[in-house]
Amino acid sequence: KGQAIFTKPGVPHAYLKGNILECMSNSDNVIRAGLTPKFKDVNNLLEVLTYDLTLPQILKGSKKEHSVVYKTHAKEFEIQIFALTKNELKFSTQNNPQIMLMLEGQIKLSFNEGSKIKSELYSKGESVFLPAILSEFKITAEKFTGLVLVSVP
Image (tube, rainbow, N blue to C red):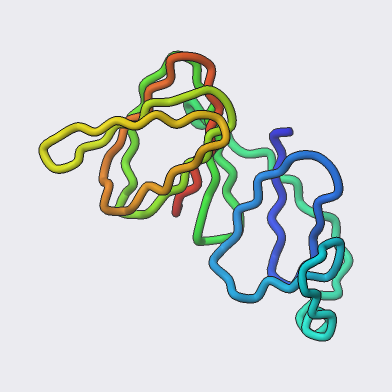
Protein backbone atom coordinates (compact mmCIF):
# COMPACT_ATOMS: atom_id res chain seq x y z
CA LYS A 1 0.00 0.00 0.00
CA GLY A 2 1.26 3.45 -0.89
CA GLN A 3 3.82 2.22 -3.41
CA ALA A 4 3.90 2.40 -7.19
CA ILE A 5 5.95 1.12 -10.09
CA PHE A 6 6.37 2.37 -13.64
CA THR A 7 6.51 -0.26 -16.35
CA LYS A 8 8.18 0.81 -19.61
CA PRO A 9 6.84 -0.32 -22.99
CA GLY A 10 8.01 -3.82 -23.92
CA VAL A 11 8.10 -5.01 -20.31
CA PRO A 12 5.49 -7.64 -19.40
CA HIS A 13 3.56 -7.32 -16.13
CA ALA A 14 0.90 -9.28 -14.31
CA TYR A 15 -1.23 -8.88 -11.21
CA LEU A 16 -1.37 -12.01 -9.11
CA LYS A 17 -2.74 -10.76 -5.79
CA GLY A 18 -4.23 -7.69 -4.16
CA ASN A 19 -5.82 -4.48 -5.41
CA ILE A 20 -4.11 -2.12 -7.81
CA LEU A 21 -4.74 1.05 -9.73
CA GLU A 22 -3.36 0.92 -13.28
CA CYS A 23 -2.92 4.07 -15.29
CA MET A 24 -1.80 3.63 -18.88
CA SER A 25 -0.82 6.04 -21.64
CA ASN A 26 -2.93 6.02 -24.77
CA SER A 27 -1.93 2.96 -26.77
CA ASP A 28 -3.19 0.57 -29.39
CA ASN A 29 -0.58 -2.09 -28.72
CA VAL A 30 -1.71 -4.06 -25.69
CA ILE A 31 -0.51 -7.62 -26.20
CA ARG A 32 -1.75 -10.32 -23.88
CA ALA A 33 0.58 -13.17 -22.98
CA GLY A 34 -1.47 -15.37 -20.70
CA LEU A 35 -3.64 -15.69 -17.61
CA THR A 36 -6.66 -14.47 -19.60
CA PRO A 37 -9.33 -16.06 -21.78
CA LYS A 38 -8.85 -13.17 -24.29
CA PHE A 39 -6.81 -13.52 -27.50
CA LYS A 40 -3.06 -13.99 -26.92
CA ASP A 41 -0.74 -12.91 -29.77
CA VAL A 42 2.41 -14.82 -28.79
CA ASN A 43 4.35 -14.12 -32.02
CA ASN A 44 3.84 -10.36 -31.77
CA LEU A 45 4.64 -10.46 -28.06
CA LEU A 46 7.99 -12.16 -28.66
CA GLU A 47 8.83 -9.51 -31.27
CA VAL A 48 8.27 -6.47 -29.02
CA LEU A 49 9.46 -7.71 -25.62
CA THR A 50 12.49 -6.19 -23.95
CA TYR A 51 14.72 -9.01 -22.71
CA ASP A 52 16.54 -7.12 -19.93
CA LEU A 53 16.32 -8.56 -16.42
CA THR A 54 15.76 -5.80 -13.86
CA LEU A 55 13.98 -5.26 -10.60
CA PRO A 56 11.16 -2.69 -10.63
CA GLN A 57 11.92 0.72 -9.15
CA ILE A 58 9.50 1.25 -6.25
CA LEU A 59 8.02 4.77 -6.23
CA LYS A 60 6.96 6.06 -2.82
CA GLY A 61 5.40 9.34 -3.93
CA SER A 62 5.91 12.80 -2.47
CA LYS A 63 3.63 14.49 0.05
CA LYS A 64 1.77 17.58 -1.19
CA GLU A 65 -0.74 19.16 1.25
CA HIS A 66 -3.72 16.74 1.26
CA SER A 67 -2.25 14.24 -1.21
CA VAL A 68 0.63 12.04 -2.26
CA VAL A 69 1.87 12.64 -5.83
CA TYR A 70 3.32 9.84 -7.94
CA LYS A 71 5.38 11.10 -10.88
CA THR A 72 6.60 8.59 -13.43
CA HIS A 73 8.57 8.62 -16.68
CA ALA A 74 5.27 9.00 -18.54
CA LYS A 75 4.88 12.57 -19.75
CA GLU A 76 1.13 11.99 -20.24
CA PHE A 77 0.07 11.68 -16.61
CA GLU A 78 0.77 11.88 -12.91
CA ILE A 79 -1.30 10.39 -10.12
CA GLN A 80 -2.40 12.11 -6.90
CA ILE A 81 -4.00 10.16 -4.08
CA PHE A 82 -5.99 12.23 -1.60
CA ALA A 83 -6.98 11.34 1.96
CA LEU A 84 -9.46 14.01 3.06
CA THR A 85 -11.37 14.55 6.25
CA LYS A 86 -13.82 17.44 6.39
CA ASN A 87 -12.26 19.54 3.62
CA GLU A 88 -13.08 21.88 0.79
CA LEU A 89 -10.44 22.03 -1.94
CA LYS A 90 -10.32 24.14 -5.10
CA PHE A 91 -8.66 22.79 -8.26
CA SER A 92 -7.71 24.03 -11.70
CA THR A 93 -7.54 21.74 -14.72
CA GLN A 94 -4.83 23.98 -16.23
CA ASN A 95 -6.49 23.33 -19.61
CA ASN A 96 -5.84 19.59 -19.34
CA PRO A 97 -8.33 16.77 -18.86
CA GLN A 98 -8.39 14.90 -15.55
CA ILE A 99 -9.94 11.70 -14.27
CA MET A 100 -11.11 11.25 -10.69
CA LEU A 101 -11.78 7.87 -9.03
CA MET A 102 -13.48 7.59 -5.65
CA LEU A 103 -11.79 5.07 -3.33
CA GLU A 104 -13.76 5.72 -0.17
CA GLY A 105 -16.36 8.11 1.23
CA GLN A 106 -18.28 10.73 -0.72
CA ILE A 107 -17.62 14.16 -2.20
CA LYS A 108 -19.61 16.99 -3.67
CA LEU A 109 -18.05 18.21 -6.91
CA SER A 110 -19.02 21.82 -7.74
CA PHE A 111 -18.26 23.75 -10.91
CA ASN A 112 -19.56 26.65 -12.99
CA GLU A 113 -21.83 25.82 -15.90
CA GLY A 114 -22.40 29.11 -17.64
CA SER A 115 -23.67 31.50 -14.99
CA LYS A 116 -24.89 28.69 -12.69
CA ILE A 117 -23.01 26.64 -10.10
CA LYS A 118 -23.67 22.94 -10.60
CA SER A 119 -22.99 20.26 -7.96
CA GLU A 120 -22.84 16.48 -8.25
CA LEU A 121 -22.24 13.78 -5.61
CA TYR A 122 -19.71 10.97 -6.13
CA SER A 123 -19.21 7.94 -3.86
CA LYS A 124 -16.86 4.99 -3.51
CA GLY A 125 -16.35 3.16 -6.80
CA GLU A 126 -17.52 6.00 -9.04
CA SER A 127 -15.35 7.98 -11.41
CA VAL A 128 -15.71 11.19 -13.36
CA PHE A 129 -13.97 12.66 -16.40
CA LEU A 130 -13.13 16.33 -15.89
CA PRO A 131 -12.70 17.95 -19.33
CA ALA A 132 -10.02 20.54 -20.06
CA ILE A 133 -12.72 23.13 -20.76
CA LEU A 134 -13.71 22.93 -17.06
CA SER A 135 -11.16 25.46 -15.82
CA GLU A 136 -11.94 25.23 -12.09
CA PHE A 137 -13.82 22.91 -9.77
CA LYS A 138 -14.29 22.43 -6.04
CA ILE A 139 -14.40 19.23 -3.99
CA THR A 140 -16.16 19.15 -0.62
CA ALA A 141 -15.79 16.15 1.70
CA GLU A 142 -17.99 15.85 4.79
CA LYS A 143 -16.29 12.72 6.20
CA PHE A 144 -13.15 10.70 5.54
CA THR A 145 -12.75 10.37 1.79
CA GLY A 146 -10.09 8.79 -0.39
CA LEU A 147 -9.82 9.64 -4.06
CA VAL A 148 -7.40 9.46 -6.97
CA LEU A 149 -6.88 12.30 -9.42
CA VAL A 150 -5.03 11.53 -12.64
CA SER A 151 -3.86 14.58 -14.56
CA VAL A 152 -1.33 15.78 -17.10
CA PRO A 153 1.71 17.17 -15.24
